[in-house]
Image (cartoon, rainbow, N blue to C red; front, top):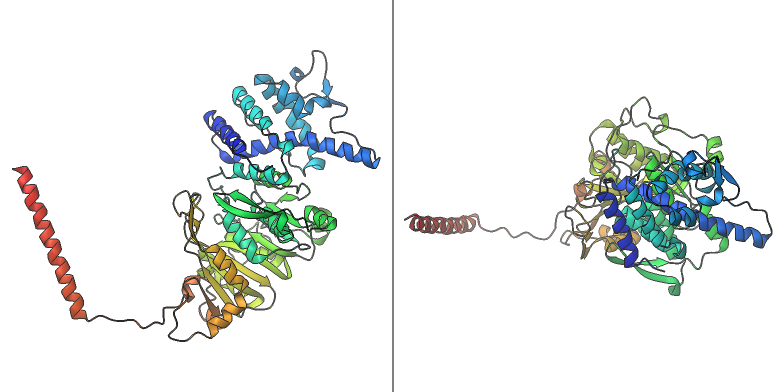
Length: 540
């Protein structure tokens, strides 16, 4: 079933109850909801596993079999130190407890129980987790609303859309400068990179896993028959979603367990990413809690973690724009001179972790493209000389509102070889009003046309090289060759190479312009005198 208005309203009600009850942090609230979703879903997963084992005639022990030694004696019968694990089923405690008893049981038992199970069930999803909603009335209201969502009756796409509605309420940047990337921008980047079945796809600053989810949806759409393609609403616009009916069982299995990889330095983001992926049927995708700028992994450790040793086919990311790393903590392989700027170190890390021929689409602050420090120039030199920079997508300044007004661009490059020509793509409108919230859909949208321009890059290059001195320049795309870029300190800012119109410019006679200005001035003086007269009459 699709995401319904009632489900959206329930999520909005939960938000209102939490805000009104003294829980204003949307990131923490999303994290708490992810825990409740997890508790709800585990009961159904356990039942499915039990049924599969029965069909296959293999042994299976339910998560809810046996007894549990309580952490708080008030949660057990008087004189007893344990309770049946069956009491940890959502259908038992969520429907049978309320108020103080619900807070106590969730806080002291449920979180501890699932933390113990977490290593096997959700890759340490519950490690360090705790209940933050301790107001009895608010918690009871929230649990009742989550129960009413009937997540067990929803398919993975609906559950994913529901959680995306939760994530959409996060409207503030994190302490490290990370923030939720607009999903329509992510989709455009993914369409340009075009990830495929059989490739490994990695986001080293995964956040809530928006890029990984978009890549998964892109692959499913590319492997869907016309009858298996749906139109769904997202952020006020319609988009296509494929069910992936052309994928074989082996390909589906690979997508679920050997395609997507991620890291993030923030434990809350790791939990949100894990839940986002789990709800979409990607429960085996592991997002690691790791700072890639300060920790290294050798091949032996990569093998232990099930990570590709030879690098990734695709890297997609929007790494943090703000902050510095202590220079003594920066690992040797990501160093760029003496720089401690995270945006430079992340870019170096991504360059190094692509496999030969691998593709990268990364959002960077504009300063990365034109910065004049030695580190900026050296990193751009490495990009141009040791990789094939294919395109720079220049985004308008308001794309990341309400988090930040910073001007950004997207770098697209392949590892290896050297750059010959760079396609610059200029976005004036991204389909949403560029105001303080950036969430109101508008008709003007340059992204689809620019994605198409990239796909036809070779033809565009031929058109560009054949242009005449009298031809009009293209307002949305243009090229610069590597030689020109080298002479400009490897500057990759789109505006640097934007061509001026070659059309003849008609210059007016200066005397004519002066006469026109004098006439305008006379009109202004006349209007001012009329206003003075009117004011004088009012005073009298």
